[in-house]
Image 1: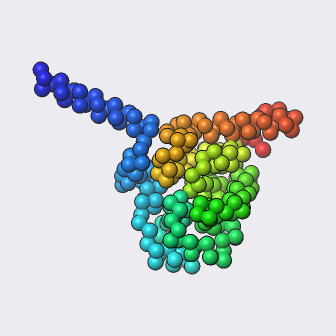
Image 2 (image 1 turned 45 degrees about the vertical axis):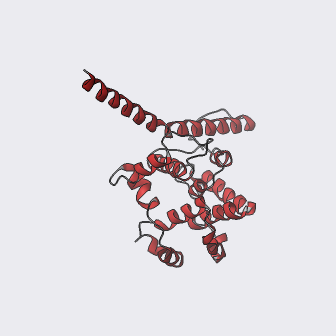
Image 3 (image 1 turned 60 degrees about the vertical axis):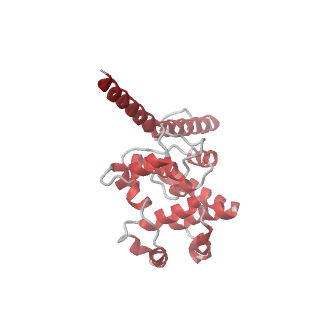
Amino acid sequence: MKSLIIPLLLAALISGIGSAAEGNPSRQEIEAMLGKKGSYEYNLVGKRLLRPIDETLLKRLLEDPEGNLKEDYILSTWLLRIAAEGDRKYLWLLDRKGLQTEGEPDDILLAYDYNVNGNKKALETLLDRLRKAMEEKRSWGAGHLYALAAINEWDLCKQALGSQFLSADGAGDDERYGFWLKRRYFFPDNPAFPDSYADFCKEMEQLQLETYKARQEASGKPAGSPDSK
């Protein structure tokens, strides 16, 4: 009888751990998910995010952005990791003349400048670009948005993302999930950021809906649909 009870207890324990991980994954669980070759998460984020940074290739891609396509668009992902980790050995990146021009790599360098130097002007520039992009595209695929995944201040990032109602239809859902995966990987100990993707979606949709309704009321217009311009 004992030989049956012990395996059953172990099975129940393992099942309980799995259920908890599904809702509140740890850094190790997120990394394991991203590293599982062939999985949705691996193809969406992991194969680039977990690729070791090759500094020689990084410098070459900065000089020849078109080569980024041949390298599976690795440039922005490497810069995002550098920005999120705040590694000061990459401060030379901020000397690039193109920093103030628009484009995803430069947006991420603005986040890096804010993270390592506390440069509020860089942050304001990034948020201004994000607002304009969101007003135009109104989608999780809007340009400049991913740079926020590197800033470990969720309240600030949440307010910026909540300034427009962002559609998650089609590819937009991939973009939204990819954003959550990256932040959970970068900042696993931030208690303000939702542990589960479902909670993240609910929080963002509620905030965006409240922002939209407040603007409609302020303008004296009927609530209507957030998807209509």
